[in-house]
Length: 510
Image (cartoon, rainbow, N blue to C red; front, top):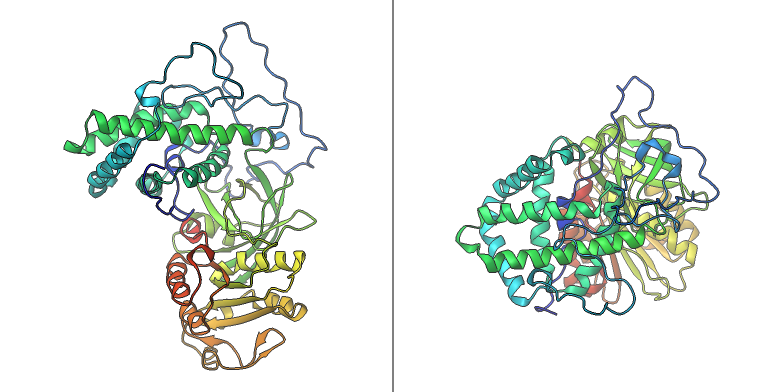
């Protein structure tokens, strides 16, 4: 370990490569009144198609492997018979991942840039980032200008509006710098990101140009803090990041498709700005309750947003998402107000660590604010499927107005069937329905709090019901609410390692 371990940022903060590697192109879209821009989803094949290995003459380079995209949605598969995603290129940035077996005799010694990062490297990266941070907007704009100038072919792979993408780049660099002292945690995080980036059509060859342009941009804006030692530190860290992601992506490509296409088979407006979507993926989609997916719509190509699953895995393979249309939210407004049965969306792989250990039997405390109730409901359903095994589950469901508790009836039904479940609605806004009993008053009856909803801000209401020592806590909702709830739960006796959240709301916005 290079430095004392530092906590990773929540998974909602995109990693270095999330901001650096461009998403893949999408076919041009037809006008809204025309036929759907993507083809209808065919029935999935009984077995994945076999992709023969290309026949190449000795010394001839392999072909550039392109994702299939919408040109062949029924063949969206990379199975055991497929070739690797792409051979590693652009050393020293994207070094090959070592295979099994001993090192060949006479292998060359690694160069300085190929050495693992040192504690001094991590320190230099943090110092240079502190200098760049005040001018981060100009530095990231310069980075993308370099990419598009020297590699114009990749411009079409990025969203038309680059403002959000530029903001994410510097946050990603900060995340990498903060977590560089925790090699194990960083590897786990980056491996998941490498697998997820397959949905963009990311190839190994993209990492080299990105690294060179990143170093050039940082060198320009780090001023007197930039020297040969700092540049070497950045090259070492970036090489480590890219090699971990490449290794994970190539391993994942042997068993999993890079993305799924999913047809909207149900669209229900629960409130004027909240919709429940039911999706049918073109192939089996593996996930756990509490996780989330990345989603792209045909109306906003190359713009991905994140949404939690609102149900546990179902026997019929259907997926459920809760979406709230937010102000100026391109994707969320399209899903709530424009999507309908028959539309086809694209999904990345499931991600997130807010899952339940069903072997532990620990009592659960769940907080869901707004559409943050989606992963909480999925967790409750999964506990019911596996059996509570003596554990209790307490759910606090918060909203401003009673009409916004759109999932309360479904939760009431679960509480009526399972005595181990308690559901407590909480209202924070003014209105005729917010005058419930004092917090903590009222007997429990059939898993429900008698006398109407509780009043107050959700985290503070939960804190007054404490202490909560010994519980596993699961939080879903707006980022500000989740962060405030973390502080409340820590003061109420919940151990830090037992507080789980993914802060998906930061990425889902829009």
